[in-house]
Image (tube, rainbow over the protein chains, first blue to last red):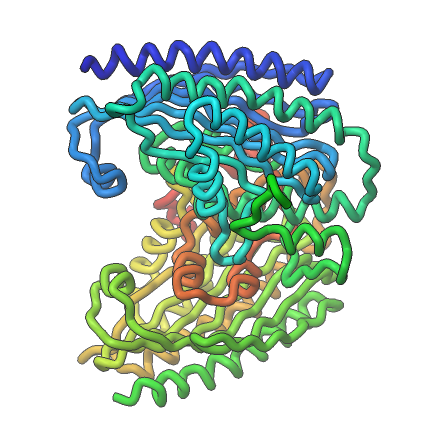
Length: 301
Length: 301
């Protein structure tokens, strides 16, 4: 298998999807325009589309990257694969909204290929509401299940579980939000071909701005006050904790000497920390805290 | 060696020092009072002294803890020691000031002992100015050198180098601030006894509020504007990056199932991130960026 050819093919498709996503998110915001930042380093190149100060979206990014390099002993250990070189291409996006009642969203799809011919896809979508709204969460998970079901009846359950496990802050005993789907090391085999897996990831990437667009329309006019903004800042702090202390994409990016500004575009515009903050009993904030748990069957809640 | 006895002896001294530090910092602030939070978990206990909304100090903490447990295979690997159980006691403190011209400060001293008799001290003090002021930095390093010189003529050079290496954000290619001194695995041996090393760490802990008190008095009335506050928020973001992604104390705390609120009391009250922020040429912010480098000989600058 020609590593560069196959990775370039996927990269071409992902790169096109990045532009579709930016266009769609710009339309949902109504004001925000993305600024395009090409970058090139020894290990590869990318296009970081940076959004700031939108009407609805305060800060966000849609990243595309294509990276190639030596497969280091550390990567061998991390991934349990033996190879000499690798290529990886992907899109990742995070949006931090102005209104605390609009959730933070994250989407990522990626394709990893080794010179020995092994390749796999990874990715997912997950939602981090500052205030959890159960019908919104149910609807979000239903839509993810529909996307999954079109490809494999087992995907949703499996990938929903993986999202619960992955988007988790062990030091807090909290999930990051209401989860979604997360998958990694999805390899083509006798039962599922490369083309089908590629189609699955493009389906996720295409659904992403649609899904979020609907949530935005439902919520962006929700009234909020200073107390809600204060809570949003604390939840943004938790988001930063996850991304800096646990996120594998951040770690891999740092270790592979990636583009720090592009990797950290995921961080919130602002954040706050307060020692031992405790929301009042039966407050909406407290209700959200009680739902930051794994294993919630959101579809049938 | 009785592990519990020796650790308890050190813990008693550190615990007293914690109270001295709180008293002195309260006096320097003029308004702030520390709130005492005792905690007890399976692995140990501690006292977290929490400061918020002072006149000069916006958020900070002085932590004391005493933790005992099984020496895990992971710790063996991390520390290159073989043992069955360990005890560790220490004080750590971080202060985030209101005024962007007052630096963030951090101090830590700790004593680690294994059931096989091996023990060592670690710790240090370092300064993170939002705006680097060279005479202040020179003075700070001179004072640290004086503390070190009273114990060993080689300590300052060695520990200054270690601080440069440790308080470093590789993904940014920036030091956290102007450094200071940092040491770890300082073991009693034929040339230096346990009592002397303990005295070295108590000397550091005692100097800490004095050093910072002087800096506060010099700077807390420095005028500042919105632009300075905005810059402070971005630098606080960097501080959060270091503490969440690299700080060994945070990692060790998370891994040993420590008290998350106490560990993360080090985080700033607020923080901000902006994609590709770039200070104007020759601005004070740019001048600070140019000094966030290792190997600066602050004393002779």
